[in-house]
Image: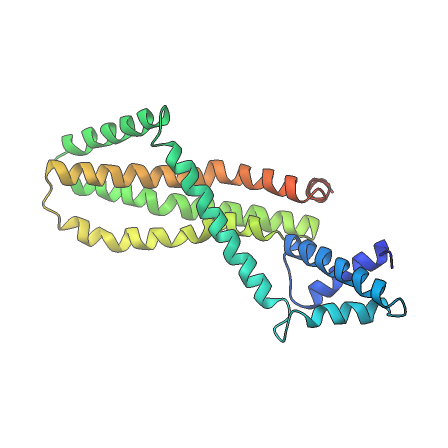
Amino acid sequence: MNLTDEHIERLYQFTRQHYVEWYDLQTELVDHLANDIEAFCLENPTLTFEAALHTSFKKFGIFGFSELVQKRSNALHKKYWKMIFQFLKEFFKLPKILLTLFLIALYYTIFFSIESKNIVIAISLGLLTVIPIYFGARMFLKNKKEEKRTGKKWLFKHVTATFGSFLFFPQIIIQSYQFIDDINWTWFSEVIFSCFVIIFGILFYIAIKIIPHKIEEILQREYPQYNLIKKA
């Protein structure tokens, strides 16, 4: 059996009916189901499309697509963090390490020269708290607007908009404030804190500016229909 466009649309509908809301996952499942159906119909030419579809679906077990969706979501989160740390490593290699060291030295100089450390700490931790929340909300709303316009959701873009669960970091930063407030500052602790602030700043820069563009490239490469859907 050669599947028609109507068959393919039925497969997309079938995945939506079974609670797969992400279009990139739907596409992977449709490809898998289509291959299965063609194989089943080749073995048994009298088998109908719907019968072959339900035979293929049974292979996913009693939980249907839910386990696959969870595994795929976990895999994309791991891929996201792998990309984050790949780009972070670049800031500790030449030539970018020079910029990293300069920023740490600059921050340390400011931190060292100001007598009231709490002011610098409050501003620094405040920025590290507000920035990811602000940009996370912006990306989330942008994705929602695009989803409403195109009628398609992309799991990888959802992971990006939540910074791959990056948004729990501000909670850690807020909770760590009291601990930091009790520190007896020495030149060594000031250097460590300077490194902490700059490294987190770099992480947020990567998550906000670099990763979203890379995700776009990946979606365009792996899903040829992505550009058509986006421009629709």
